[in-house]
Length: 77
Length: 247
Image (tube, rainbow over all chains, first blue to last red):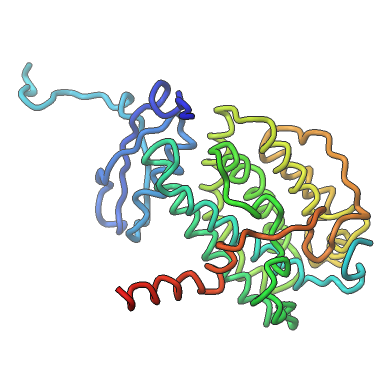
């Protein structure tokens, strides 16, 4: 018997994961995870991307990122 | 007091060995779900948490000698019932709900006990166990979040029952270790802390402390399955090595 997990598909949203290795470098995107809430996204990000010795890791909901322009557009459009 | 030994015979080393054996089994059971969880992210989290807990068990085993007493005897090589893990880990889990209940309740129960060790008066535990608490934060977030999805009542009830049992009776050795200052929390405080952490009330549990084994910290007999026990002793590895030689 298979179970449909709403938290995997229906309620899940994408989070982008940012990290850096030294204080001198800026945060950069290292990947993304899909999760239904911030807690699980944090756990998934840590489990998935903690292979390297990051000094900082943060996550942000992708739909909270405000795009100014995207590929194919220019800053004037 | 229950089967086996008397209360006076049970030491802090026995408790640390129980945490170690439980974390070892928790890690193995997590790892079994590394390709069976509901999503790829959950698969990876199961693998990562499994590795964390296996690592924690190694650190805990390493604390036994500095504590001055290693309660592990030769029977651990032949008798699966000599291991001190909870009944919850005796058999591989057959449903995701069992994983979630263990992750949210039992893993957090072990963490709360480790906090009691770190904040107690025993130096080796204060120093060596602290890092585990940072890693366990992510186990907790994972378990608590999945718990919100709702799981069957039975694994939840069993996990709560075994967590409360594992903390020990109100007048048992955990209470004594707390009184001595070696643990910062006693059984009552451990139970309260667990409920507070999980933002939920434990279901009503009836525990027959007369049947409770203070060494294995469990209320019923039984042991881990034969295959897992063989794997722990390295016998599974040998079985595969022999097969490849014949091929």
